[in-house]
Length: 69
Picture (spheres, rainbow, N blue to C red):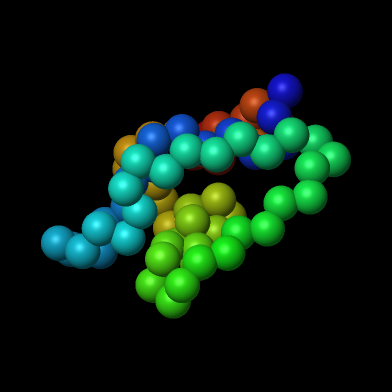
């Protein structure tokens, strides 16, 4: 089971697409770094994972639990 499983997450701010069909799997014990230019969507992705923002498309699971639940 993955520690973090993100599938096909898209997030918009109005007409601006901040994330488009993002998918990633992180296994327990993995060391993972998310790098990117300013405006690449790193903070938006973290905000969706931590539920600061509500994901309307795709799926985010932490150890098998859907964050929407």
